[in-house]
Length: 250
Image 1 (cartoon, rainbow, N blue to C red):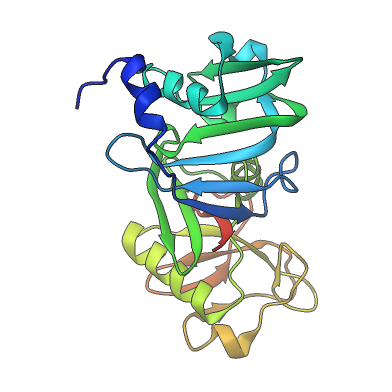
Image 2 (cartoon, one colour):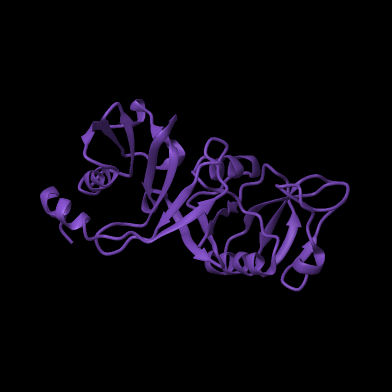
């Protein structure tokens, strides 16, 4: 579909109602910022919006005044190369910044009156899909365990996946089946047993009906998920696929 003139979209915006879902969790910088999942449609792509941060000038290819955040969105949409945008107030003026960079490559500036939005398609991914109430991202390219964690946390609202409920574990099973990959999750060994990245120990009563678990109490290495459904420990510097996760509230 060819992009139409900006003037047409000023009129169209008045009739658009975006379908928002609030996301929680997040990276070190943005974990406390409210996030929104915008499902998109025929006229605009799926996107995720965060509050409180601006694209740095060094990462923006264009900055200019706009009438509103929606106007900034349209400006980005009409630029083929635009991957995301931020909008913030300076005095009585709303400034819009556009970037060609995906979120994991951006330096952000803090500003409580700002918003940052990125097109989900700007993130190179094998899978970027909703399962069981969570958004899951399996990026293109394998990494070791620490680099996998760092990558996920560089995207607003995302972290290396944690799967503590039957529903979440079923979603992990779907992600593994869909991609066919061995995947890092945020689970590692400890002297007291496998523990998730948020400090909660693996619940065997919940996990064993879905996955086989194999690990060594003598090791503190991370635990991967591998087909056909086994959680087992693996050296942290091994290169694997990985799954990022973002949660949302209806």
